[in-house]
View 1 (cartoon, rainbow, N blue to C red):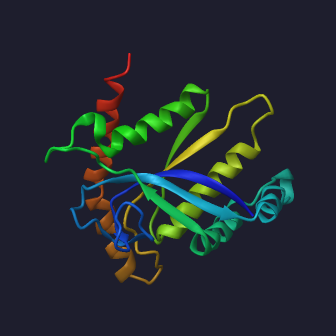
View 2 (cartoon, rainbow, N blue to C red; view 1 turned 180 degrees about the horizontal axis):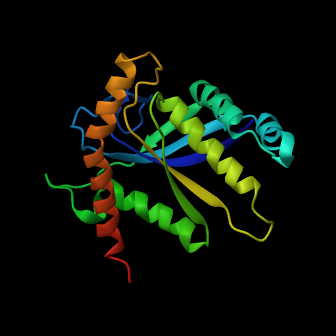
View 3 (cartoon, rainbow, N blue to C red; view 1 turned 60 degrees about the vertical axis):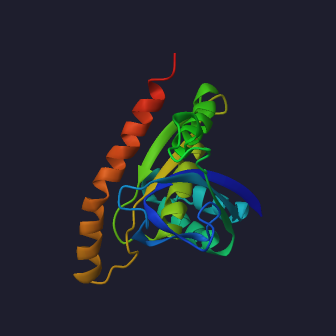
Length: 204
């Protein structure tokens, strides 16, 4: 077994008692509101042999790689063995200052990868996707993108944005719920973009 990490931002409600080290994220909005964002990293234990099989799977027409199949398998691995670490807001005041808020820490870590020459891809999933499926899909995308790079090329880092989709294909009810949840998540996406703008404005 090997380990890999992926960065995420989410407005889902955390599961478990510790919001900074949650068991995962659920199907509802954060208890702090629809626009509330948590930033963090997920560490996943995965079977390298299984991933390699999906990456090298051949199809008609010379297509190589089964990203969909790998995504489903990785989602199961996320459920079996993963650890979530959210960036914590640090401040002695009631109002968290820019230097100590979670988004600044998050963007600083991503900046390190970019300064090394790595490309960054923002991935936002669709409907009928739960937390584990979202992480599995993002990891699959990262593995697929990196499998195509040349030996002298830098790695691609995938950043996941996960909104509270139900993870269900039940007709009408689940889709209707996901549709309204996706609409209500628009402000949190915009808030994340504004946070990125504020961070970029501090760079020389």
